[in-house]
Image: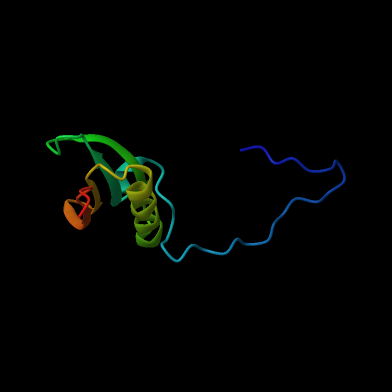
Length: 91
């Protein structure tokens, strides 16, 4: 990682505020919240539009996906459990 600062500026040695969720994962495997957009038939996941370590961010992405893809089924998962499901069908 490169830090850009003026030549005479001392390095930032102050401790950083820890995340309430612990260290952030280095890869996508430890991101338990997933937002899935299903195909038009509702038989398979067409794309995963978001992954997150945070439930609040996962739900925000899920809500945004229901607006972005109004006619599609959308699921919010925590690992393998479906937390919320949008059917995409108009009443």
